[in-house]
Each structure stands twice: as C-alpha cells, then as structure tokens.
Length: 337
Image (cartoon, rainbow, N blue to C red; front, side, top):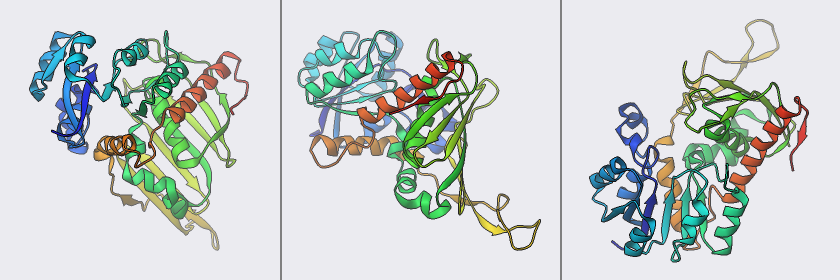
C-alpha cells in the first residue's frame, strides 16, 4: 500500500470492540477506527500496541503486520507517520515523544485529565508540527456540517430556546454534546450549573461527573442541558426551537426531525410548531468517522483545514471545567472567553 504508515495505540472498544455490536452495525458503517483503517486507501495500517493479550488477539483479525505490548518495538518496525491514540490521558505526550517520524494523530477526547494537561499535549504536537484530529465524530457528519453552515438557519431561523440531554458523564457524552451545540449554534458566553455535580454512576470514565447546566450563547439563546441516568435508557439529544421552526436530533443523533410552522389549531391568526408533523431528514452518521479520516489525510497534505481541531476540543473542555467550577461555587455564573 502507498498510504500513510499508521499505528493504533490502545485497541479497546472505540478502536475495535464496537464492531461486534449488531445494533450499531445497522446504522454505522464505520463505528470503529479499525473499520475505517481497514477500508481507507489513504492509510497503511501496520501496527497495534496494547498491553492486553485479548486486544492483541483481536488485532489479528485484521491481519495487522506488527502487534505487541511495547510501543518502541512496534514503532521501530512501522516507523509510523500517523498514530491513532485511544488510550486515556496520562501517557499521550510520552507516546508522541516515542514516535519521531509522526506527522499526525487521531486522538480520543478528553485531551486532558488527571496527570496529563491537555494544553501541554496540544502544544507538544504543535511544536513537533504534528497535525491533530480529535474524534468529535459529529464534525465529520455531512448532514450536521450542512446544518452548521446554513441548513439550520434556513430551516428554523435564529434559535430562541435549546434543550439538551446527555449521560454517562461530562467527559464522556457531555463533551460531545457541548461540542455539537457549539458546532450548530455558535460560541458560548456564560455557563451556569443548575445543581451540584454528582458522580456519573456506571460511566466508562472513572470518577466522571454530571450536572445540569445552562449555556448562554453569543446569539443570546440559552441552552438548558440535563443529565440522564444511562442505566435506564440512553439519549444524547438536542432540540432547537427557532423563530421559523424547530429541529430535533434524537436517538443519539440518528433521528433528525424538522418541524415547520403551521397555522395554530387553538387560535385564529396565530402560528404554531407542527410538532406532530415532522419532516424526517436522512441521517449520515454512519460515515462520519470515515470522513474525519478523509479530512485528516487531506490536512496532512496541506489540502484542507482540520474539521475537529485541538484548539476547538480544548475550548469545549474549558467550558466543561467552567460548568464544574460553577457547581463548586454554588451555581454562580461563569463568563467564558
């Protein structure tokens, strides 16, 4: 192959395991990094590093040439130009230090947590001239990119009120939701926690918390965000009520519904949202991760700007930090710059 020499560091659920989820496979052609790398001609997937024997056995399903628990030995064989880093924050800077030929990284969020400072990690990659794509997958979704450019304004006009839900923790789905709100509606001016932060029971990231909060957007619209207990049911949902209609994204963004204006049924000469007459938009989430890799390959060649940049990811994480600081401060409003 003539693609970019690529190594995957951390071969767990998002790297590979989710391909075994039959329900997810119905809606996502590319649910994992492995599925994209196996199919994408721009990447020559040569190595996997993971300390788990089970993970390395799973890597054999893909006929990857070099696998092992030691980064140095696999990297010596691969000489990677691209690293897909799915391990949690804590050792990512050291990983980059061990890969001198690196041109780019695809990395999972959060960028910083615990022992690793996200800004320091980003600065290291910048100093090394390493392009970074952060896996906020919705930024690779064709439909959502269309909505972010003009489609949302064309359908619903200026947002008046926004309602949203998330679960399994701020660092897990909360950051995806806040990034999605920013993508569609614009930047955040203030944050305010609406209750104290509590441990997100059953969340995949140890110690992750969740809290209800409000975001005041630069446009003046306020997004009210409520956490859900994912042990009951899942939903990362977003419901935007604009001046000209309503757009709702449910079923964790797989259900996209536009509700236009109509004559109200309760009063003459007034309008209502036709909430019982949705226009269903065809979702394109199934190829979003593949699109992020497309964009990464183009960015490495200097042919495109990164869709999900490190600076953007840091801004989302700073908003979450402000939410938790507001909760610690008894719900005081925090101005976010």
